[in-house]
Image 1 (cartoon, chains in turn blue, green, brown):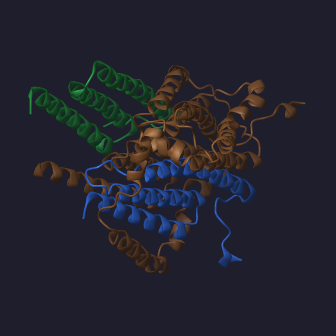
Image 2: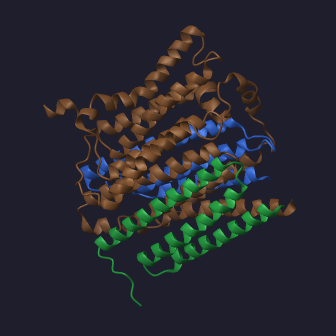
Image 3: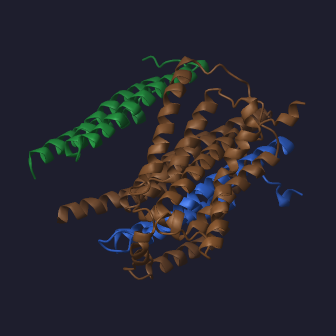
Length: 102
Length: 99
Length: 321
């Protein structure tokens, strides 16, 4: 196993952690954090797998995709945060309504 | 290894020791003011040592100058942010720790 | 060399474990402010992971956006959330109640463990050596106009990705703006230190953005990194209480926001007509065309990120009438 696979496995771990937190946490800010962690896990897998070139320069295409992804992630995060603030202003809580209580 | 390699290794290790001390202070000191004191002072010196250690290895004067600029910028930003954090803490009524 | 390899392995292992631990703490600790700070630290550690994986371009973007701007966005949102939450017992520890009810959730763990194990198995079953598309990138680099392969991929070989990405950025801002006007925040006097710092740093940050933009042609850097540094300058100025002059907030601001996607689209149509292929530049002019595109993209990315931080549409001229 090379360092690339070590980081790829860390990426898988981050994705799973984020997915778990996304499911169990009710607060929307926590869910947004969880989505960001999941995204970073995916980025880590992509860049780690681009490193499998041995001594040569790593593959530039996944790097470019990840840079694009980072910028898309921050804009989506900003939009999600604004939606959360609007929801909290309308309902007083930054949580989604719970089905079980209704 | 030549002499400059030993020199930068020594400087980098010394810088890392300062960083370690600063981080230890951040984790172990009792309140926000003492933590800021540990962090900003020790890390600024540690980073300075690291910058000098890397500048020894720099290929050109321009590269060494860029490293120096980075250090100066971090000194400026670090001092200002420490001031802002401490000011914010005082405003919230957090009293400095007394023995 | 054995010792060096061992050291590298130790470093990578600690970094990987540190990443997982910080992500776990950021997602599990009950205080949201602490969670965000931990997430910022996670972003900085991730930037080190990019360096360790020989991806300095990604590291620059991560340090500026993933750690810097996302953290600023999250903290600003938390501050607005706290000030809007009038319910006192909720405001202090907004999650404690929820955590107690939901903590023993074994069903997600039971479902997610096989998912994680399956993903890990898939990753490990991939061939250990794969060059991917790096051979094609290297072969076409001569006609690409720039010598940094990542910039060549972003602006030339897969320019349509970046075109669509600029549109996504614009759409996100339109979404934020459509949800209402700029929040009326109390305008504190910024204080001497913050004021002086922002005045000193804003020109330096603009200079750094220009440098990153220029150097991106042959070394790590480029439009995204430059744009995010520009965005950081905007955030700093906004924090110091600076607001865009009403005359500039109307048309000039909107022009700056659409410059990137607009010029990109124009270039796409132009190349489609001239070369018969979307975003296929004539090799002789590729360098200068990429620089033009990158400059427009940098301005748009920077202004969009700062506008996203402000949150909400700045008042238009019509609103004053």
